[in-house]
Amino acid sequence: MKMQYEKMFEIRESIVKPCALCKGEGSTISIRDGVRWAVECTCQKKFNRYMGYAKAGIAREYWDLTIDDFTGNDIVKAKVNQFIADIEKVKQDGLGITFCGPNGTGKTLSSILILKAAYAKKYSIRFTTMSELLNTIRSSFSYEHENDEEKLQYLEEVRESTFLVLDNMGSEYKASNNPEFVVANLDYVLRDRMTNLLPTFFTTNYSEGDFKETYGASIESLLSNRNLCLAMQGGDCRKKNQVPKDWGSV
Image (cartoon, rainbow, N blue to C red):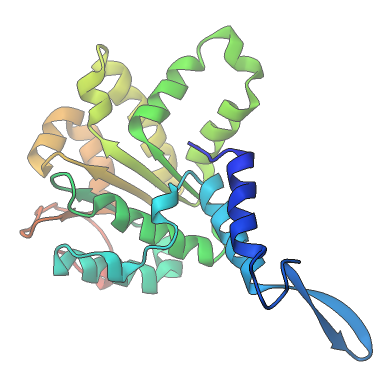
């Protein structure tokens, strides 16, 4: 959920107002060739970054976290570091990761760290949950949705953002009384993104076997072409994928 304007204003005040460099103005003055220029202060740049995260759906608790805050599997950490370091190649190859494992193992943090690296390179990003996506798609069938610009923009961002994280995959399936609807719409979103080489990342509590059994061979096949599968508590998901060889396997 995107943060409300009032809350973001409070956050800006807490960052910019106490800044000794710009004295709360958000910019400093630079003189070049006798001309005075307003230069964005580091405090304002920090707030702008936070604003970008909030608009993309990244929760406040993740804004300041880095790879150093990840305390899980070293193999996973190394792969996340590789994606962060080579984010432009990730984009070029349309690669993603499916993070699978129990709660509290760093799946969401890992995916967000990659999103933030993409944002730093000026790529468009979006973070959302599977439940939010499917609820929005379901509501799109109602007449009232036709004039709901916020929901329309959200669906467009999910389809077209260069980097996307779909968090907590599986919870929406368990809660649904119409699993065919879940699978059909997930297939549509994935097929659209995968064929356009848009990096897509997933987090799920499912194991690889449970994932395939739940969503079927079609979705598993789509993911296997472009996504590594990382088990968050050691071991190897043993996904048979066609990821370019220079990315290796886990």
